[in-house]
Image 1 (cartoon, rainbow, N blue to C red):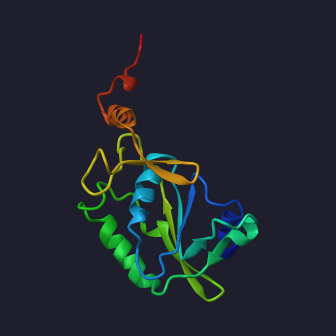
Image 2: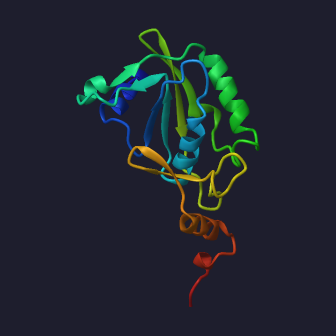
Image 3: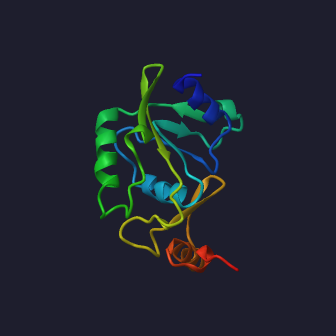
Length: 168
């Protein structure tokens, strides 16, 4: 199965906990960073840039339109510059192979595979704001983490946490 078939297969199930589509024709949308944080803090997931979801369409086979991005190289460069900026994201989890450009019928789609962050690295947050910049993924949406969820992530990230003690 090639990359084009994989994208059509992903889209056939619709947006969900591990898939997000963004139109992003000219630039990296600001909302991408909420999704990056949410995927990293939840299960990981795939972001497709250059795909529009028509919410009113009931038929899932017609719900997504591949519009492509105008300049995939520029979008990828902007993505890398931003994800490596401590001003935007506290940790870059992406490797080169996690960001690909795929041609579908003459239209360029940027595919970003965001891995789940290790427990010791979470929470992954944006805009230098732990309390307002930490997201989780539920169903097909990105949601701010509660104070309790933040406390749990911080506890689990602690190397000296009580979860790693060997009981006699």
